[in-house]
Each structure stands twice: as C-alpha cells, then as structure tokens.
Length: 524
Ligand code: FAD
Ligand code: 2HG
Ligand code: ZN
Image (tube, rainbow, N blue to C red; front, side):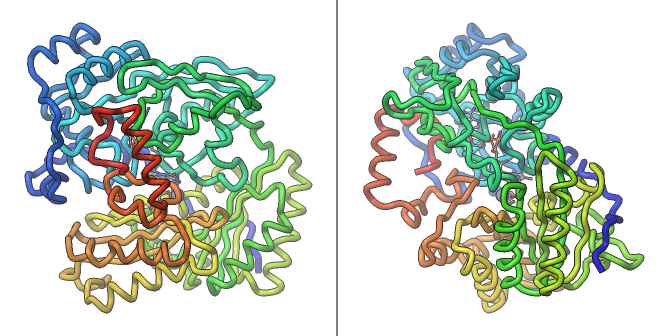
C-alpha cells in the first residue's frame, strides 16, 4: 500500500539550534597543532603596533580579542579542529579587507577567512595564531535583476537569507544545503558547495557569473559580471570557486538564480537492496527526467542515528512508535524531490513513476508529501544525519565521489575493517566507534561516509586514513566530492590529482600569495 500522508511531527529547527555558537572550553591536548604535530610557519606574531593599525581601519566593535569571545571562532563545527587565534577582525567593506590584507602581507601575518564556520574539513579555523577575518559584517544584498534572475550580494549573506529574499521575487538560490541557516554565500563559493539540488541546478562553477575578490596583497579584483556568455580570456572567477580561502577573500558574488518551482513533491521510499537504489535512480532519471530535482539515499543505520537524535516518528513507521523503534527494517531509503511549474503534470508523472517502481518491487514502501510542512519533515530525515552522526562525541566524515556500482561497497569495507580491528560496537561503550553509516547525493555520484565515534582517537583515524582514500583512488573516484581539502585532506590530494595538476595548483598559490599568508597549513 502506498501511503500518502506523513505522520512525523518533527520540525527542522534542529539545525538552527545546533549551530548556535558553542561555548565549551578547549584544552591544550585538543589543539589541532598538537594533535597533528604541525610546525608553525615563519609568520610574524601580532604586536601592539599591528593592533593600532587594525584600530585605524576598523572600529573597536569590529575587533575581537576577548578569550571567551574567541572560542567559537577557533573551533570548527565538528569540534574536531581547534586553533589558537588571538584576534578576529570583522570588516564591513571590501575596502577595509583590502587594507587589512595589504598590511598583513607586508607584515607576514597569517590569515584565515571565515564564513559561517560550517565547513567540515577544518578549513575555516586557524591552526596556530592566524588572524581570523570573519565575513559576517559583509551581509548586504547588492542588487537583483528580475528580468535575468541575476543576484549580486556580499559574501557574508547567510544562504537562507539570500533564498528568502529570492523567494519573494519568485526565484530560488541554485544551492541548498543542511547548513543553510548558518553558512554564508561566500563560504559556499569558496568551498564550491554541492548540496541537495546539484542534480537540477548544477554546480556553482556554472551558476556563479562573477566575483569580487581581495587578493593577498590587497588588490581588489572586481569581476562582478552579469554575463552568461563571455569568452574573453581566462575565466578567472573559476580559480576562486573551491579555492577554500587559499587565493583570495571573496567579498561579492554575482549569481544566476532560476525561477522558483511552483510545484514541489517529495517521495520518501523504503528499498530492500543497494541494487534497488540504483535501479530506482535509473528509472527516476528517465521517467521523471526534467522535474527530478533531488535523489538522495540513506542507509538503515543512518536513519537510526537520525531517529535517535530527532526522537520523532520515522516517515515510514506504521505503528505507534517513536525514535529508533519507529525506523522500519528496510536496508535503504531514498528521498526523491520533483520540482516543476504545473502541479497536475508533476503529480501525474510522480504517480506513474511510483506505480512502476512499486509494481516491479524496486520500492517496497513509501510516502509522499502533501504540503509544505510535510516536505520539510521528510527533508529533515535526510538533512539531519550530518548532525546526528556526532551525537555520541565526534565523527569522522568523508565526502567522496565514486562510480555508483562501487559506491556503497566503501561503507561495507569500512564497517568490516572497523569490526575486524575490534573498534566498533553500538552497545559496548569501551569501543571508540559507534557506527559507520552511508548516505548522500546518489544523483551526483557522491557518497557521505560518517563514522560516529564516542571520542576522537588516533586508532580510529589510522584505521580510516589512508584506507578510505586508497579505496577511492582504486575505484577512480575523488576524495572530496563537495567539502574540499581543508586541513583534513591536505596530505592526500595526490589520491585525486596528478603531479602536473598539483604543481599547477602550487604555482598559482606561489604566484598570487608568495608569502603564503592566506589559510596556511591547509589545502595543499
Ligand atoms: P566556512 O566553514 O566558514 O569556510 C569554509 C572554507 O571556505 C574555509 O576554508 C574558509 O577559509 C573559506 N572561506 C569562507 N568564506 C570565504 C570567503 N568569503 N572568501 C574566501 N574564503 C572563504 N557542504 C556541501 O557541499 N553540501 C552539503 O550538502 C553540505 N551540507 C552540510 C550540512 C551541515 C549540517 C553542515 C554543518 C555542513 C554542510 N556542508 C555541506 C559543509 C558546509 O556547510 C559548506 O562547505 C559551506 O559551503 C561552508 O560555508 P561557510 O560559510 O560555513 O564557510
Ligand atoms: C550532506 O549532504 C552534507 O548532508 C554533510 O554534505 C555530509 O556531514 C556530512 O558528512
Ligand atoms: Zn552533501
């Protein structure tokens, strides 16, 4: 029986509350520099003259030096990487950033650009005493052209605020992700974030039309174009999309925003095997074609983690149960979103598709959203996994691209490895690993492997790295599909890039940032 109503009562406010800046105290042994045995680069240390200079550029409320206020800026979202910065600057204009960079470059003071600090690879926080430049005060919408759908905005605008603004105009931001309430548009561009609808709207390499960037020596590169087609010379903005704060500070973004779909449906399905997930995707791609806007998959254990965290009723639960007891026994789940302009047309297409996949038993069970609240609830069961996986103390996250055929075998290989090494148990609290789960953007060939742990431990890390990267390289994938290299993967780029590619990346870095003041100890 195909159910048409969703019963879960949970809301998706979980993220907003969880992303409020934390206030836990850091201890010396947990510092990134100590944990990973990093040697401080040959940078200057901030002195009174430097502070005087920054005070001449910024007002006092744009400068943070209080140790309590610094904690949140020094620690990443996973509480895995902890830096030692003594100074956060919060400029309000591109010009102020230009002056700061020009000064820091001359003084050889290292810098970390920071957006919403939701990055998952340790790129947004310092390792030593780098100055944090927070983009949070650069938060204005600059212009919107209703005819073309081109939005120009400061890089510190929160993604959700940009999308809410566009919603009033009948448009949509061509990127959506679970951290939308906290991440900044500039951070999204700097990481080339993929998110939940890349399948429909493509990557930021396609939708970003122009950027304004401050280079390490303070030069302002004004490339805020509004042209869809421009073949005059190198496409320089592409250099900064995904550069993770290593080449310049993005201060402005010009982006093409499509019309907001008038009709949106979600189907949440239960399946019996990974083979069925692939078959379901193939059918969705051909039968839902132009209205297919997301195809996400989740394994059973990822739903258990979400249920434990949300403590609400799973969308496919038919009994009077709550939390983990409400999660049915299907090994895999799929969330399919359709977006279009005509409700009847989309409903009919989805209905036919569902009839087909249920009839040939690709799909065993399912439910379809009927209103905005249900849509949100269903998305919650997918979006909340990222947070749920760290509820036991910590999480090791991998965001890989793999051919669909070998995608889930990475999760199985990791589970086996952790069991063989006697590191994994959901019941024995003395074992560091709670669970290894898989989920992700199957429509983009992007798997998220999350290893939920009771605490960060060298034994677990050694069991996972380079094992995961070797597996990915062997299967011709990428060690980062969307979160980037940051601190976590800086030593592993060669698993995904050739020597020639790495040399070109290094040459560019040396050319534009010869003093390596921007985001040191990361990326490469
Ligand atoms: P930050 O974390 O502050 O910074 C990330 C990197 O960009 C750092 O290296 C930083 O130095 C650099 N940077 C930031 N701003 C600038 C700037 N203006 N100029 C130059 N460099 C800058 N990512 C995805 O791709 N897809 C997802 O679906 C997704 N879902 C997520 C869900 C959750 C719950 C969480 C916590 C994270 C998720 N992420 C996802 C990861 C993260 O949200 C993205 O990488 C996001 O784009 C980071 O934006 P931010 O503003 O928080 O950047
Ligand atoms: C997602 O798709 C994000 O939910 C986060 O990219 C993935 O936390 C993760 O590993
Ligand atoms: Zn993702």
